[in-house]
Length: 364
Image (cartoon, rainbow, N blue to C red; front, side, top):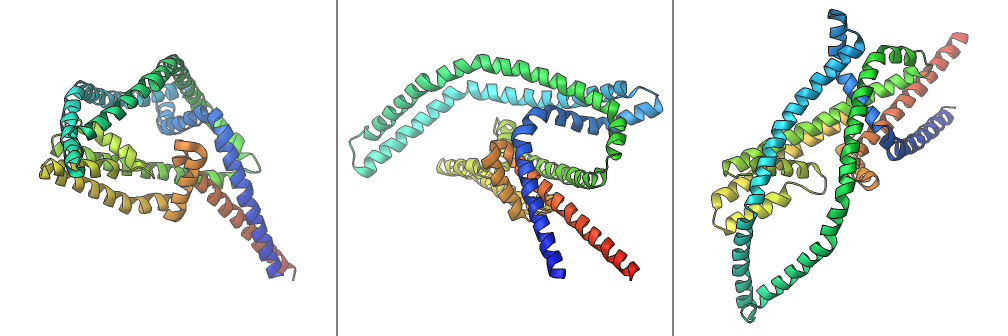
């Protein structure tokens, strides 16, 4: 009898895994793109809910007015921070664009030296290596002119349309968030009356905790890496410390790419140029970033998701394969949904088994 019960539990859990996996895939692939603005709106409503409740309780403000004020306050704070950050980044980007001719001249001089050394090393006629490089550069420039530039021109109009559409979506998110804040008590009471509320609440509560913990963990690691990169570049007095530092931090968050793709070649170049101090700072910054990620990622992300770091990495890879860049976050979140649902179903089965055992003992 016990073996039959174990077989039944395994079959039910396997069926739960299959159904939940299919539901997660269909939801992320087809439903999430359609309902994403409203998911963001609900998240914003959840963030400003305490302030809205305070304004409603203390000043008797209607929830929709209090929610709108709270949302405007949140958007203003985030907008101000983003404005100063983007302003600094744009200034550094403009400075970099102005200095491009200087950098091209430096690269050309270095290229001449490298090509001359190659000619001497391989016993070629002087100028052979440089001629080969120039021919390939001309081919590359022609490809850019013929393929990439027309494509950029054609996509300018579509980009403008998408930008206008994005403004409309942001307006929809704001209005939806205000309406959700207004109707949140009613929505909650309606959901609580459902017979599926107990099981659904267990899953959503766990998902809310793990999902927020995962995003918080990724953000913490990215902020620390960005700070270390900006600090290291500031020490060597790089003019684009913020711009390059943030870019390296974003690359470092990706499983395939990493900060080493920038720091290692850059350190080698500095070493070849004789700038041992800059090379040492760059390679030290890279090593510290690697140590921080290796130490914090398994503890923060693996612990928050409730799975082994290996499974988390597998989920990231599968997510990237199925959903492109967004899969980097959707993969682990999908894993959390599957694991949490299976745990809830297992607890329910075990609870039902205990209830049956108690009933049979009482009848005896």
